[in-house]
Image (cartoon, rainbow, N blue to C red; front, side, top):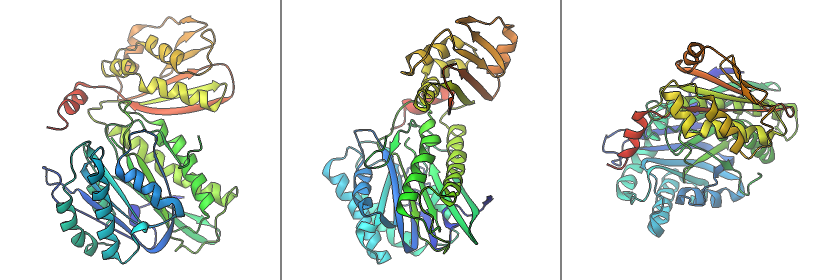
Length: 407
């Protein structure tokens, strides 16, 4: 597997574009389009928030047949909790895009991100769609990646290439996310800042293999990051597979399916980490490793509880190695734990063992939490399962950004 340039337009047969249509006061790009020259097998995972934007509801409907050919997305406005007009506006975006691309409306998906509860300036969007379609290009991934950003400081895109049999297959992605990040996405129906991630591949792959690969990759990556503990109403990851690589079809539970899944997970993990590094107001990147849990779910619960703890995140910002807050998060995580078996490490420094603290020089622990990249490890001593979560600190800049997000 090798990393290649091109984002969502690296796979054969995909074009993209992004432009400014008038939503953002900053006049930065705010409307994106991804298009496949061929019909695609398509799957998506979506927020499990019970309050869902119109784009989430509509995309679930459109993906029932497992097919799609285009994605149009705006930034600067979430088009959520805007009543029936919000649904009408999403459908208007879809309808005009489909008409100009000469495809069926049900084969167009839609995304929105930004402020909740504010009416979408649909006329500005519709006026810009003809130019958006006209400008579709094989090198348009970066334009599209820039057009889906909100408080992000940098665009996020990646592509990889790897062999499947005698053919080379490519996967590309663009994404956004810097705040309101605590994804808990699931397939529909579920198997167990919004962040948006749009993925393209030229692989020939069965629908079942595509669904399984997406689900597993999301569970290990996007669903294991948190910036502020707030789950968005608009989270989604969508994958379009157009089959132009002409490889032998990838089917479930084969080595080829596992190779495809590893490639997808590599992309998602890189993008997920980029989201944490780009988090609103963040000054530190934090990795939380949990091992020897009784079950995989327990490992994930503990890792996510620590990563989500406001008190832990404040301690990280203040470079205060207050491991008691970590122990408390382990205890309320909902996982099976034995406080006498828990071991906690700050960096390489063991600080908790046998139900009590391990004496350490304060300067050593202060040095760990003063770093920009911090590792926290918890050994539960109960089993063989592990999990990793990624997070950041809570800074005064985060509070400033989110105290005036609408204004």
